[in-house]
Length: 49
Image (cartoon, helix red, strand yellow):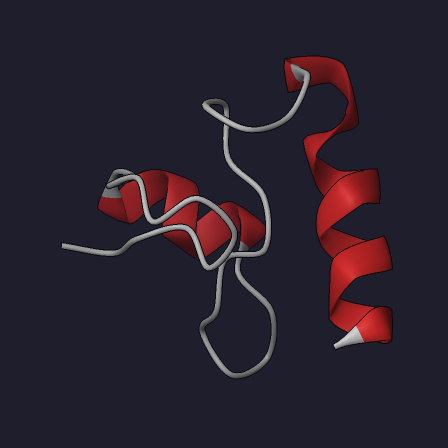
C-alpha cells in the first residue's frame, strides 16, 4: 500500500496515481496537508527534496 513520504500515512492506490511524483513518491496527503493544497504542497516538497 502506498504511503506518504512526509507523515508515513497510508493512502489509496487512486490517490497515489493522482498525486505521486515521477518516481511514485507521495510528498503530501490528506493527513498532513490541507485538502485544497495537496498538489501545491506535493510540488513544493518535491522541488525541495
